[in-house]
Length: 402
Image 1 (cartoon, rainbow, N blue to C red):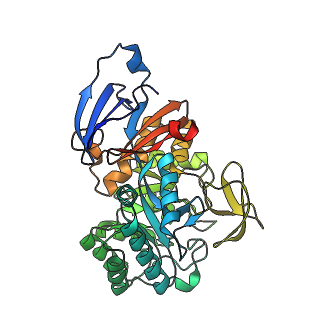
Image 2 (cartoon, helix red, strand yellow):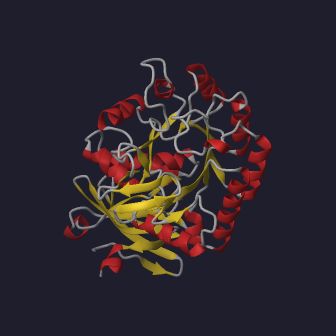
């Protein structure tokens, strides 16, 4: 593929591509994991017209597993984790948050320690692809419906000493804590998050409108997979979905796989949040696996369809998790014609990076992280040809398919 090969000298690497938004051909010089120089190339050259697009890498704020690797299972080996990261690279992800869900305090501690050990043993590009950890629970609603598939035995009120211990066991990697503000101690949890540079995110909640507004005023900044982890039937108004949609202080994360939220709901969410929307995969371990019948740790017997819909074998109306990668959520947004694909791309790359404090606005600019993709877009179908992490090619489609 013309222009996609990196020229390199020691740590200096040069990439060429057409900027995904401006359409201007660029040459990016990378060194030390950063972009050190950007040069516009002369237009009108037929060879430049054949260059791939160049776009910021995807950043997924919620990954429970992928390709058979389960981040909520004790005994995960570094080799299996590395394979999972490599699969995510092939799908355009250059940064993600491993997500640990509600469990016993001892198990959460073990999982955080396990992940820390794996990252210590991992090579640099793999370790740097983990940009933090998302703790989803256990401080969520105990009610059926909002609790989702989380084990009711371990749902509990916010516990700051536990959070201190978990932050220590994770080596300071906690970046998001999903909680419900219906607990009396919710404000203490939000204050803890604010002190530690952690995003307090409302999710799996049955909170009242007053509790949601109060949490946002105290510093809660996000909604976790809004529209999911909820009662099957809600009052017309008020309810906790409308409250979060109406709250400008809350950025809404959504699973745009076409199964978790219908197209009309996605349209309403997109329009209501007006640029304050982030796409996540919430992928589980069976994501990326062949279609078929599986025995899952959560849900028991589940069926993965060829289209990527994961549901309970006993009741196909009930989803058993998300099984599609983030890039397919971007494709889904583009296919619905809700917005230009570039805007959908930003919802899965620039927006989540900004939430985490990654210098996203400097991406594809001097000083920005050298984490980007070379890709082709045909209609709403997106094909990653190369993934670059810290200036190094970590996935090359030509080598895989040749």
